[in-house]
Length: 329
Image (cartoon, rainbow, N blue to C red; front, top):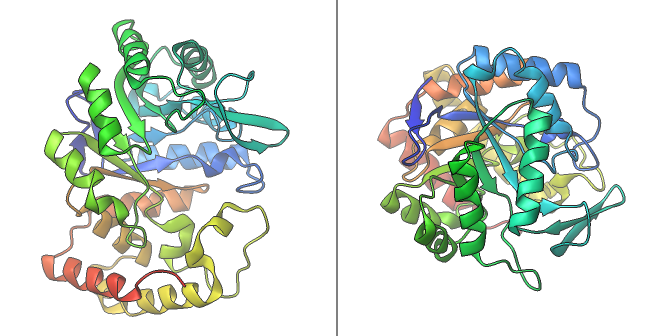
């Protein structure tokens, strides 16, 4: 498995990372089995994945607990990334969404950050978080200045509770504000070949300033594996309902495109999903791809993409095909 540095942190991580949103289960993802999830984490580590990404809000602590359980005797083998900023303990912050009777709010106040970090350390069963990322940015009326948030993160770093600082779902202007206070090592944006809007600003910014990018949803929740066929329905409340590419007409166009890459998958002896991950990792400004897996075999397959390198002509051909899709109808 190839590895890359996470900004100026001195932390080296695998180019394919394990995303653990889905193993938290809940209304977005449906039932999940903790024993299988633990085996998926173990399979990922055994296959060369070192970066495990989670968050408190994934299953309201369940994902972090499962990751902590899986790493109980393997903590030194993993780079653990989690998040802060989505809060449901009281009415601090700005309302964001409601799920399972909990009102989740955006809060990057130093007080709530500290409470979240201590809770994450307990659930993960560790004494340090390798990468702590602000999950969503604060907005009015509880718009904590980034300078105050960053000062808190830097103090946590000085205390040894976190090793590197990251920010998810941020603009270049917001990253400027973080960087004005200290080192911002990681940015976690949404990115896939079907959702390339950050190529205009975020990816060039990070490439220019040495900020590592951990891009999430590179497979569009499974659509870009080719396995989510026309016969599979999307249930009400499922996260996929928010992705227009899952509409039947749009999905068919994507599946037709993927089918057209059969010669590439045969030549590289890889799956469609591995081909897509490899393409993603070779885009300028992309450091690591966060790919979800709820089963061991999924983690193993995803990990294999970390050693796949595509020729420039293959990359260009795939981009032309993707761009010819245009926007979802």
